Image 1 (cartoon, helix red, strand yellow):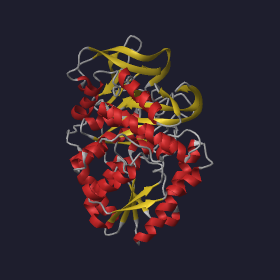
Image 2: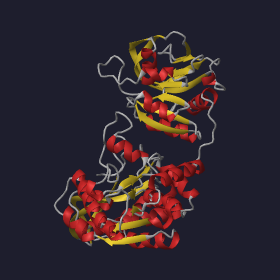
Image 3: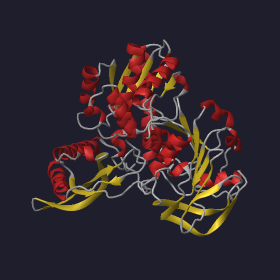
Image 4: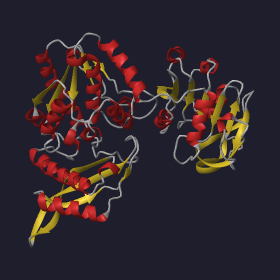
Length: 510
């Protein structure tokens, strides 16, 4: 299978590069910049892309890859820091720019380069750099310029090396996708033949090799990720997969009943339910710190799941619906990116469980998982539900988690969901939910003074959850939602709407 490897030097856009390559129907993976040359060779890549990053090649601790990548006889594309690094490692000269260039710039192209095949002579691009190329390495030539960067792109056609000072992967570079596809198709010789069908074939082979004739367990939450992972694994090992659904008391209104019905009747999964609501809530009773909540829920889940697993008998494997963004945000294994928050489904299991983890979706983004689910025949009403966090409503009750607060939040959240669907807006929104705020404010109901709590509403648009913008609701819809919540949910006298984007905020409040 043709494969493009992306070396991550810490850019906020590294994952976006991978997405753009996959959208071009070419498989890609991200590896940390310091990966060994021998490891890169194992992948047998068709081409390499060096990502951007916040560093300068002049820094003492500047991230450097193995220079041997330039002796692999495969095409290489450097982006931003990747361009400066390529220049630096191949004998060119990088210097501090007198005038830094951030944001939009007009790029003038040299059409003799296959990288710019069929592009207009001039096009807007998105710049983000403080260093510039003073002298290109031997064998290279400049192939584009801007008003501030006379060497905005370079190439060595003989060795198939190309580099860009701008970011082709972002939407602010309108011809960026064409540039990337020229690199993929014209320079690397890739074919646009990677899709979810080919992923299924490869994944089934890997699952079969990993699990063999053994048994496996899957912790089903009712969300898209675990559901798709379970159905995919069941295709390979059949009834040797047992799914366990843990009701932790932190689910949405009527969720437990709906989950069991969907998985048993529609998907025909071998599923067992464990009601551990009291156990989870008692352990969360004295905690207000969001990270502690996540860790308590994670530990309690493992304990409950461990007990349930013992009743199944000898099982060697645990199936998890871990996705690419989970891995990136949790343990930064793909590059020098900061950990944002702990994810409940990343990081391994206690040794006492003696199970190996199988993560068949680990290399996919959320929208790719949904496409996979369609291929697997999973109902659309399950696949296109909004994402729900592993720790459930515990991270949507800001502060202390109590049965009373959970009840209020469930009711508010159900009203929010119902009105979004009624207005036919559900599919326009990536994620929408209510948050219980532990603050009280003065209100007036029935000519009487009230001093009750507030509900925050959050709705965002996104492609994969890595970045998100707040959704601009029609005011009449927001008005109906707010009125219903205040009138129908006891203890709530105020509703606010969150207009923060990610970054700088996260989608969830905790």
